[in-house]
Image (cartoon, rainbow, N blue to C red; front, side, top):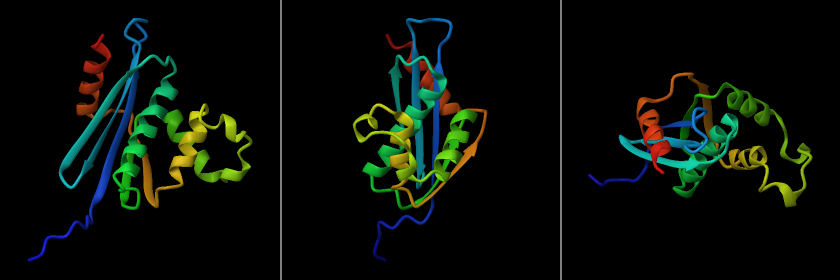
Length: 149
């Protein structure tokens, strides 16, 4: 039997960011977990952004860019978000046509919402679900990441 590289499953993506409001020194962190064909890919990064929504958007953008780099953007993807505001933004972004966004091309790299909208165009079968309880593995990785000095 010949082995093929065709993947017929669903990619699950968990994206989350945390903000440490108790300590300015620790800042914040974001992480994402991609589960595909039984394999897990997890990435986290410490950041110094003090907006919970921005941190969660950064986590999602980095996750989607990772999927795109792996050429997995045409596969069925289910994204689980822990931030309700981000979920509402995505619903709104899916209903807005790109040419109707009033932002100059020069400023699009500075605007993370515009970056997210541009990135979403590359995905053919992606759905988003809100879950206010973060994935336990991501939560653990985030807490370790935020402690790194």
